[in-house]
Image 1 (cartoon, rainbow, N blue to C red):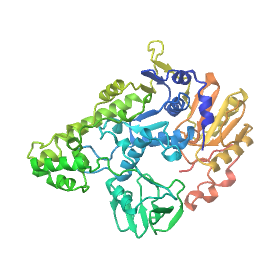
Image 2 (spheres, helix red, strand yellow):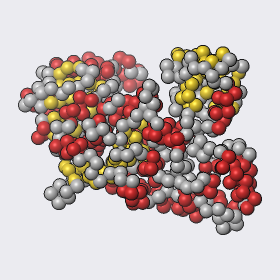
Image 3 (tube, rainbow, N blue to C red):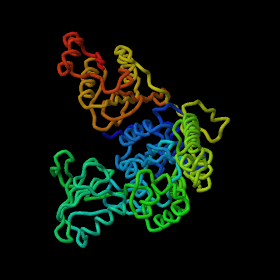
Image 4 (tube, rainbow, N blue to C red):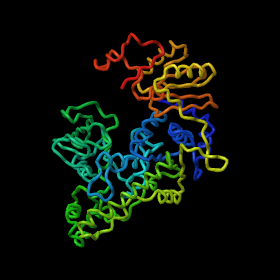
Length: 506
């Protein structure tokens, strides 16, 4: 699903065009509806050719934004940088898939691949504010993934196993979870945390004959993996010789922490060891230090992010004050773990400024551009919410096409889009089903994609409506009643449907 044509149309908005022209400015505020945010981010990344770190207030918003941006930009150029599911001081390790996803993003920022788009350059990295504020081990982008391709020679299986163990993978009899690997004769099974399915590598001596995906449930091989194995580390704190030595020294000084420090000193990964990162590495720093020169940090809804960051910092501090370390030491923390605490948003902005990284914002609040020279106001407005009012929607679409507007309807599925074209035609609204919306004047382009909301700009004679705008629900427009379960199908009589009706189901 590609909505690149809509991005070209959106750039006729003077605010978005000004944002592209202002690339590199230390500060800029773009005022407009929430649905405009992905267009502004995509324009900055695609037209100004800048790497963008888009920050959201929650993880759910970050995931939704990634889905939308992958419709406006090449899908492989957009990635999510998730935050940990745990607080930095908890004796719980983040999940292997979370860590792998984070390390894969950092590796692509530092050393993008030139021959594999899934590990190639990134245009937009979307991160919830939690991951922006959490200090992390520096230089994670320099960690090399275990990479193998069919036809490679000179790879001893024992060396590959050693590399996987050093990268935080756990050896098991059968691969069942991300971060597992297993060896059977000359066959190596690996489940990278960034893959949907594990991979099976067949060795012949030190040559790699074939690499295929396989299913976890029955262990049967699937299709060939065209780009081979690319397995980033599964832990952000790797048990290097320096880390093990520091653990041995600390264990002598603080035997009460031996439950964690003893296995670490022997090179064994243990649950919750990341909590000791502040005393096992030289320093921690924010993810902004991993961004390339010229990158832009853009906050989506800065007001919500500010409130959310304050809650996160306060919670992090409360957990530190009552942490397991304080309890283990009889009320006095044996080691100082404050360096891992979430930093304040202002501190993150200060670090970005010291690195010369622009700090922008996209707000839904109306900003007076005459009073604020670092603000631009978009001509876009939130699309009308018809909520199943078919007559109102048809009236607007008919009027817009008659007046020469450029109009696009974006549906989640092809079936809904095709049915909508038929109903629009029956209601005397010129419409066409297209793979990519070019939004020409006087005709409604109906296509598929993922947008969280629609936009209307009367001054530009441009409208983009989504399925949710028309029905008030997502994924529920124009379903075939004959394929519904009988309990729901009986509530709608297909005979009563007429041209122009939009049917809303659960």
